[in-house]
Length: 285
Image (cartoon, rainbow, N blue to C red; front, top):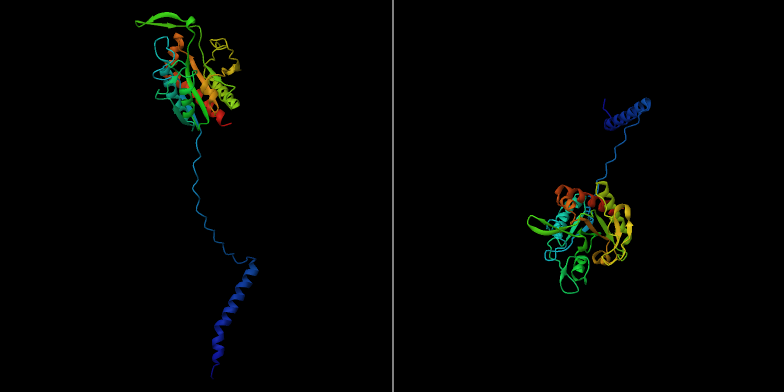
């Protein structure tokens, strides 16, 4: 018998149709639908590089200079040396907290011409060298001017130290911060000075109590007595600074006991940590 060729050609197609129907029936019986095809995850766009945040910058001004070195300690060391030593310890303490330091007068070359043409260390006079300090601090979030304290000549007592004729006064001691009403950012200046004073007190340092008036009798009232902050409106650097600013007197150089503490490297480090913590806290608020 001769076979129908079209029937032979249709047989594979019919078989496929029957197989598909069988599979569909099995799926219906088991209640399991065919597994859906998993969508292809989109390819993420390349991340844009992010710019590093600009760190806070604090200007640290070393009071006085090599040629106008300020007060002399009870044992004959210049105030500029004390100021520079503390500033050099303060710098890494600030940097460890992510604060960049803008050094001002670390080389001791900024002199301050006074009205009679002589040079002095940094808080009065006609402002030429003092303005240079303000200019050098431009762009900073805060300016801290580092100093150490002395007393009026009438308070000094002569003594001899290692063959040198010197003088001392053990009557006063302690730190103080000065801020100025003339600073355009007084509120922040006071907040930072108070924060630093608080951090110093927590580390065992005590505020001075003897700065109530200037030598001429001008009052220097408390801005924050608890934390050792006073108003001193005519200090050039802090009154002419466009950024928040404070002047810090770290301690009494003429006090023979406190002088030794101020020279101690461990004590300097402790003080620097307090200053850095206070500034960091203030500027983060």
